[in-house]
Length: 149
Image 1 (cartoon, helix red, strand yellow):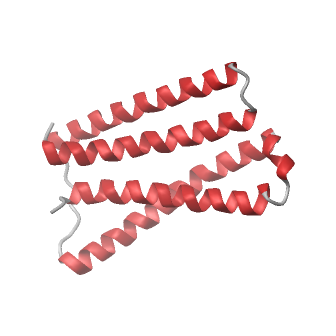
Image 2 (cartoon, one colour):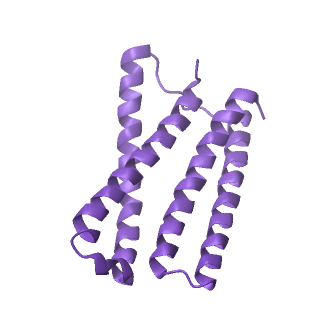
C-alpha cells in the first residue's frame, strides 16, 4: 500500500498531466484551430504560458484539497503534516533531479533554437521540460519513499 507522501506525489503527478492535457486541448481548439497563423505570434505564446502557471497552481491546490477530503472520508485519517529528516532529504533529492532535468530540457530548447527551429517549438519545449521535470520529481519521491534514501 502507498504511504501518505507517496499518494500525494502520485496525485501531483496525475494532476499535472491532466491539467496540461486539458489546457493544451483548450488552447488548441479555441485558438490554434481557428487561427493557424497565431502559432508564430510571440504575444500569444507568452500569454498562453503565463496563464498556464496560475491555472496549474490553482488546479493543483484544488486537486489536493479534494484528495484530502476523499482520503479523510475513506480512511478516517488526517493528512500527515509533520516532516521528519527523511522527508526533507527525499524532498531535496527529488528537487535536485527536477532541477537538472529542467536544465537539460532548457539546454535542448536553446539547442533547437540555435539550429533554426521555429519559435513556437521553443515554447512547447519549455512547457514540456517544465512538466517533465515535475514528473521526474514526483516519480523520484515515490521511488525514494518506496526504496529509501
